[in-house]
Length: 299
Image (cartoon, rainbow, N blue to C red; front, side, top):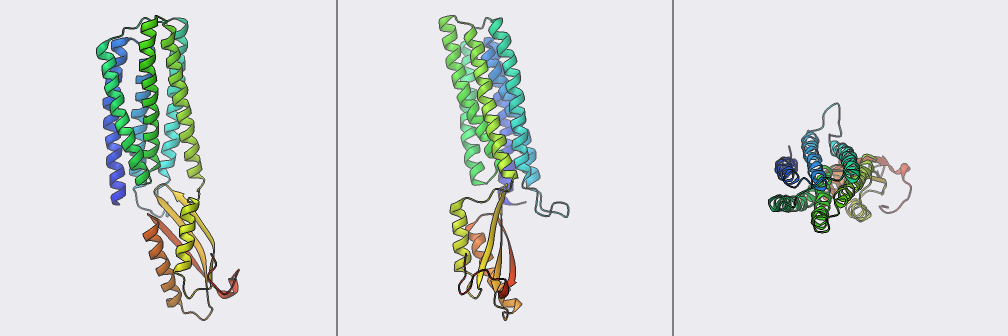
């Protein structure tokens, strides 16, 4: 198991611990105040806990080495986890809408309990710190599951702040329906978050290419390290979780020995792996009659 995979697994366990703590705190806040909006906020924390479990399973599965059944590895498991997270978010939103609907037409009394509000603020601060950490490490470790979990937590932080402000306004104005309206807004917020996660995951499952800047770097590296070859063409890339797959055709003179052609391939692979983290490279060597251009290495 790679160092990067170990880091992702440790962070996923951390998300699970934070999810349990925040759920307990927000559950207490909802109970202490009797607020539908804070109850909806606590319900979203249930989703956060589920997503933390899903992310943990995904990063552990993605860390498994390639085998005969999956020769390219288990890296795409993280994209599937983000889709599952999106589905759970949608289910939570539906439950919140139900509570908001009931609460709007049959308003409940709630208490502006100082301890309950304080506990909710503490839970939000914990979520904010952990969301920042997840997003930062998810990007650094190229982990879609951790990044998705972090983005969802960030959305949770924003919605919770809105709920807290709204609950204070509802208590000050005496307009009890505002509590239910806020709950519905929480539902809409997390529904949008779920849609964004699913959309990004589907793009990942479609074997999206690397960014144009990275592609330009790849082409420059091939051109600078293919001395002795005629050209390189049909350069393709795809991303799968933490891995980047690069393949292309390298045209060499017909008189070149296998050893010499292999040496060129080794030189290119070495430089590509130094420049592109977690790259897996496949080079198909072709004779000069397969060239699409001539005279220089054309990339």
